Length: 237
Image (cartoon, rainbow, N blue to C red; front, side, top):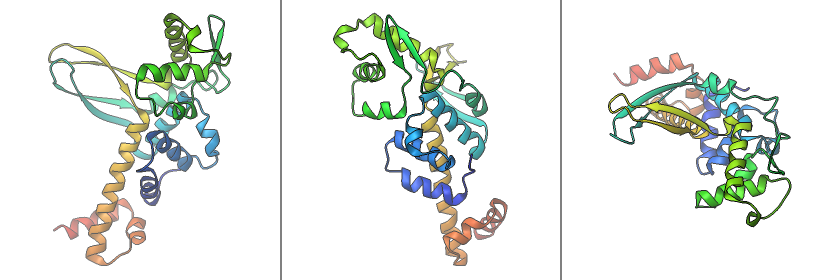
């Protein structure tokens, strides 16, 4: 996996800021895994994609993921920390591949991919989107009219079991009121927040040092983090 340089971060952020989140995730993977073809990345299962994004987090921004949520019952701020390496390791590459299929009541389903999600990205109703995704992933064909609600729920459950990293759920408990609930962790969104935060910080540093010393962007970005920090300290005295 390629380590993102300062210039890589800025170029990635500039190219991805106007893209759909699905495309941002694939662009990030294409940048950090240059040996992989972009069309192949789009056909990775969601679990494989999310595991690779967690690896990017670990390699480029550190393993510790710190965040906070508000308790849905009392609105208390709850801080939490996760380990990106644990998310990375949760992917079982032997069983969660693009060729993996499950069967539910004589119907076969393959694991969803980013390309599949792109096909339902314009669907505003979550229930309809989930139904369409199951139809897309059903290798036996068939219309939704022939599926019972029970079959649809069962198919969704089995797909989640077959590719658990497709959606990461975090168990949380509020120390203030005792409320317990689950939150969905969007690894792609978390990583993009890190990329955007670093890009904005770098732009600010370039602005300050270029204004003070007349250096170009390339000259500022070529400085090590330690040297750049010392120059920023002197500029801000």
